[in-house]
Image 1 (cartoon, rainbow, N blue to C red):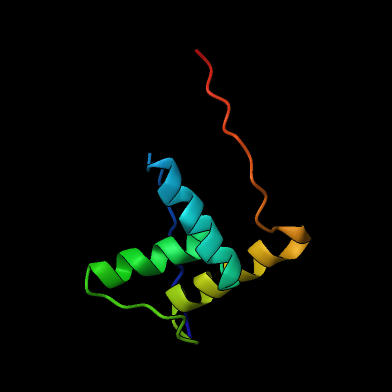
Image 2: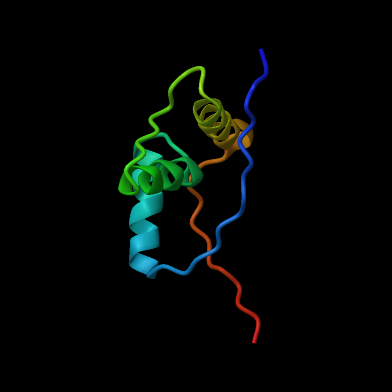
Amino acid sequence: MVKAEVVWTQLATRIPKELHRRLKLHCVTHDTSVMNFVVEAIAEKLGRKTRSKKGTALGRAAAKARKSSRSAGARFTPHRPVYHR
């Protein structure tokens, strides 16, 4: 059986600071990564709900993202972005 691999791409966007703070707080309190939350929110908004279903490529990728965000002490750490002028 051939496993279907999900090809990932990076998304960079600007959001209001308060919305970003709320996003990070939500993710910490719900024990999920920002990446996983955003992937699921976009999929839900576009009409393709992708709650981590075991056996699907996207479900495996989401589970891997959750696992990697929990390892190495990756937790909510407030920081200030550095913008160079």
